[in-house]
Image (tube, rainbow, N blue to C red; front, side, top):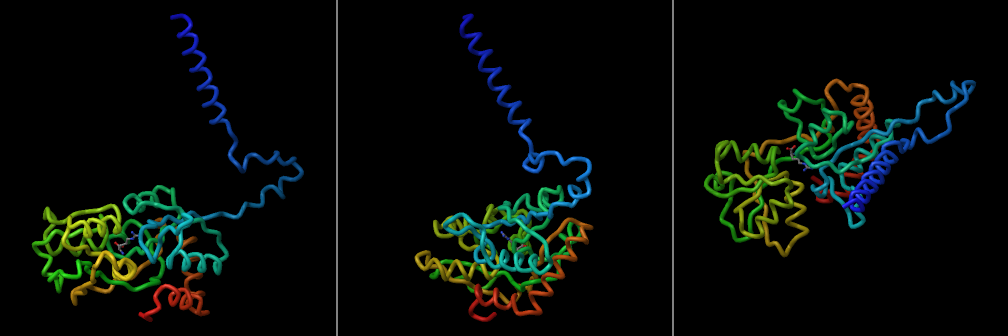
Length: 274
Ligand code: ARG
């Protein structure tokens, strides 16, 4: 009894000690020896800010993780190139789509690049860069499906990524309360469900659907367009009122559009010349 109590106490002390040590561990910037007072002006030179850029890296070819787990894609290259022109440093952080806008609002991310469609609703809570890409919705169905237009999905089970413009389109078609709308955390999850027969179709951005259909021939999917699918423009999002960063991003975007860098990146990912 006594022994076990002692053991428990020792364990508690050890763990609290460990916790304390962990808490006291200096932040990396604080690890440098304190600058003498005379060097104050030198020490005051601000370290270059690294902007954290959130991205839901499940959206090939716009943002995804390669075999090495690195975040890559069209959006990443555009953002990186624009940042370079603007003279700012960026670091990409995998950020689930749901919660990304909150992470931005709360300051956990400085910007989001994630094939985000510029919408009036979103503009109320965040600011967008100038548009950098045009997209539209597209339907993915099994090759043998008879679905030929959006209206054919009226009474079908449709998979969408939660809180996307794809969801909006299907909500508009079936009504907000339709239990035929199946919401997924990511488009790949919705497409996996399509392959498994759990849904009859998936509605998502054209670039993602096209890439998936082309790169997964074994899934035997086809894409179906609809004339009602409106053009959507992608923008880079920053916190509302963060004009300083927004201006830098816009300057960078304008520079890569002007000098051909943007076109080069575009051609690398979308060879068909859209
Ligand atoms: N463009 C669509 C929207 O803004 C879908 C974007 C989803 N992006 C992503 N990386 N999962 O609603």
